[in-house]
Image 1 (cartoon, rainbow, N blue to C red):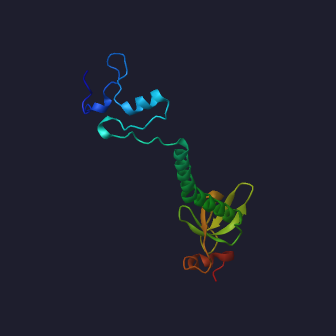
Image 2 (tube, rainbow, N blue to C red):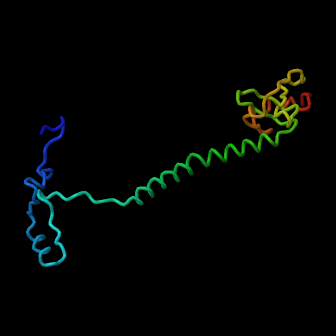
Amino acid sequence: MTLPHGILWRPEWAPQHSDGREKRSDAPAAAAQKTGAAEAKVPPKGGATPPPQSCGWEQFAMIGAMFAILYFLMIRPGQKQEKALKAMRAALSKGDVVVTSSGLHGTVHSVDEQAQTVTIQTDPEGRNRLTFDMASIGRKVDRDAPAAKETKKLDNGKPT
C-alpha cells in the first residue's frame, strides 16, 4: 500500500483486525468487561489522546454571534443613513441650498413630488435652472456654513 505524497504513516493508524479477530491490548478493560464492572479508560497506544468532540450548538452560536456583529457594525448604520437621506429629500422645499451627488451647488427653485424631480437654480439671476431626480440630491447645506455663502445670493433670485 502506498500513501499519497506528503502523508506519513503513523502506528496509531494501523489496522486493528489483522486475522479477523480483535486484538486486545488493554487487559484492564477486558477484565472489567468480564466481571461486569464499568469499563476503565485506557489511553490509546503511543500516548496520543483523541481530539475532543465539539457540540454543534457551540459552532452555531459562534456563527450567530458573527452575524450579529456584522449586522450592528455594517448593515444597521447603513440603514439609518439611508432613512435620514430619504427624510431629508422628502422635506426639500423652495429656497433650500443643496448639493447634488455629482457636486453641483444650487438653490431649490421647485419640487415636483409627483414626478420625483427637483429644479435647481444655479445662478443669482435665476436664468440657469436644472432639473434633477430627487434621488440625486446628496445633501442639504446649512445656510450658515461657509460653503453656503456663495449660493446664499441665489435666494429668491436676488442678490443679498
